[in-house]
Image (cartoon, rainbow, N blue to C red; front, side, top):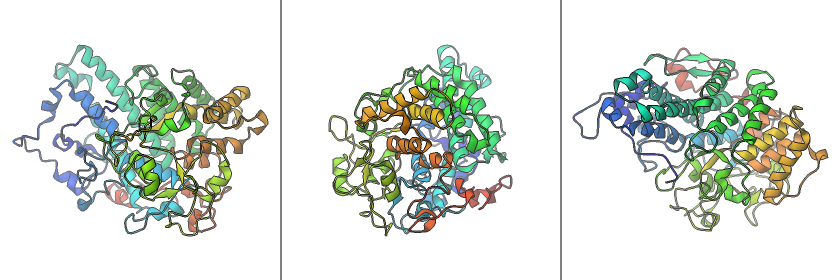
Length: 538
């Protein structure tokens, strides 16, 4: 199977919800375990099975892809509680969907056409006018710290003392050591996303007592913590490409460190470009490579087997049968097209959601990586953001395989999302050489042209390598992969210096106040925890 997700015990029956940073009423109601129910059992019964440790780890990985225990999307069995009981909309709360919307809808790379009644406050992401009550921001915030809570509980249950008390030894104990390193990587990844989106944040680890309200840590404190975690676990993870597909290895650690160091000037006002270069060079020198396959194959239903897996350093794994969700690549594929185009992408119908803004199309020009919908890709000015037919339509992800077959299901999709891939490492190296004066400019040019040649785009010469070119080249290669907001902020053109239609809520676009570089801590959680404080401006 391409996925590692397994059906798990009901987490509520272990009272794991008690350690989550924030809970809804419905979660608290589930803490009473009825051991006479055949479907419920205690934690020690669960851990009696040697496979339980890998199953719990699978649950943490799956938290990036699905919204709950059930394989039926929209079942109302969300990990975050039922919507009727105060939890977020299940589809809205899917991890990748939330992260993608906050990184892309807030930029020139995407504008969504959905109406307010069905998607309350979605327009505020389009317009960069969100506030602390935005439901999409709130849903992602909850999902982030749900993930952290899962990792913390896994680490509590796999200490040396716990394992010895259960008689765990030998090969299984050795495997669990690797599992713990993977779990810590996943927590570091989630905290990195929180650092990027929120700056300061509530912080908890496995060492905190259950029921303790987390304290707020600064962005710099969180940055240093995550770097320390990555340094600590690096040697405990498998070498690059030596772990099961979809699971973290040392290259994933190096890639995450490179991301943190590259953005350190934004995060902690400190230049870490030397450290970024060292991490990027480790990635480039690893067993991963830029796959010599058509660019489109990187985003197809079989990108776990069609050669793309040689390039994808860390994917979020999806399967149309086993990971049914209204987020993930199901959202990205359905949301980007109408019904007619949807049929060509291996799905039953399109949701007519997002397209790109005029300024994006004007900046990237005629590049073969910009996969346009035939006859509907002019850089048109969008006068009515609710009219999906206005604006350029692009294709990125597909539920077709590289041989032209549909994925396993025509509603829920098989394409994995490449959270980290080698092409990005090439572009980070080029940025460090051109913008930061690190590395070798000749090598940077070669990396740029390797990617352009793979896509069938003309090569460029060294005179083309400017700061603006690097930013635009990242858009050409990585559009809709969840980096645009971060890139615009790092290049200093997010709030001002680069304009796009509907930015700031104006049809012609406006500059944004600096505080819009961060999202607010949701009001709901400020009320629940007096240790938390709001970001400036909200």
